[in-house]
Image 1 (cartoon, rainbow, N blue to C red):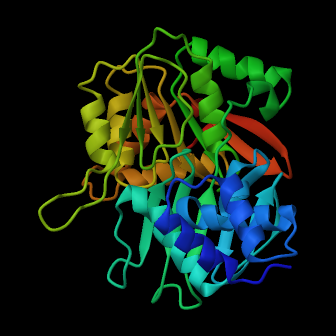
Image 2 (spheres, helix red, strand yellow):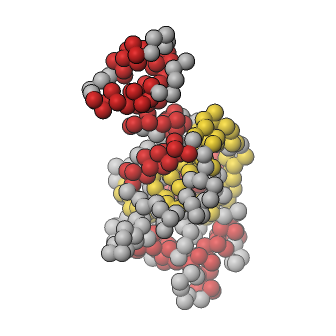
Image 3 (cartoon, one colour):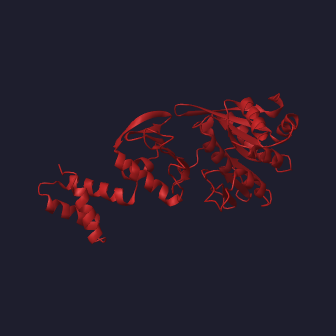
Amino acid sequence: MVSARPHDQLRRWLIEDGDLSPAELVERLRSSAPGTSAADAGRRVQQTLERIDGFGALTPLLASEEVNDICINGPGEVLVDVEGAWHSSGITLTEVDLDLLVERLLAPSGRRLDRLHPTVDARLADGSRLHVAISPVAPQGPLVTIRRFPRRVIELERFGDAATARRLRAALADRLNIVVSGATGAGKTSLISALVDELPADERLVVIEDTAELQLNSMSAVRLEAQPALGELHQPVTLRDLVRNALRMRPDRMVVGEVRGPEALDLLVALNSGHRGALATCHGIGGGAVLDRLAVLAQLDSTAAPSAIEAMIHSGVDLVAHVSREGPDRMVTFLDISDWNGS
């Protein structure tokens, strides 16, 4: 076996001569450590290059089509969600490895992470959603959660039987306003992506998200993404701001990803202003529960009467598609607005 020192030697060679190819590095390493096999030297070179340019041990996990989520609970074992169940990835990170990994994951976003700002949300280049928490809110060490999204859209038939797919397509054709609900990881974003993929290519979509996640194949789709405050002179751009702006962009349909705050009121106002065929997602344990939650969220920072908000939900929302998941299987159940009695 090659000792741990070749990593340092490889780094020095790359600093001295950045044009060295992986094959040349392998040969240099084998020459400097007689008895080293080509396979072992190749593995060391790959690990070193990943530490410098990539995401180290996480690189194969981020490339895998089977991994849905990656969780790192401080230094130690890395866990992955595959087909709705948690498994060991077989990868263990040291404290140094983890600190370096967090730095690289966040570098492209420019997001701030320190004791005054101990949590951060960002997006990786492949569209994966990243959340990091550090001390003091995470005393055991950096907590890293990466939510990955399929690179290809899942067909509607994967969310139930043929009748479910037909009903969803009919709801799109009838330009119903649809709220997609479900628990974390149930498949809300995947279902919205599948619905968007069914829409005519000539429809102008305005997609509003806290962190861009949806797969958009339509050339007429435009994306708006909320932004955090950047220092004292730059105010945040919230989902609420974006929902209001979207109405000025002449959308044929509006898609709002993850309603979780007072923007619920602005969404309801938009749904009651003649914009048909909108799609939105919201956490909830069931169709009725998510409408109850929308009513509560719409009252945050608002003086609107509860009865007025309930009336806007009844007139603005047509259908709730609730996604649940058991292992790899997803299932959609429906609630018509006429079956909701209010919160």
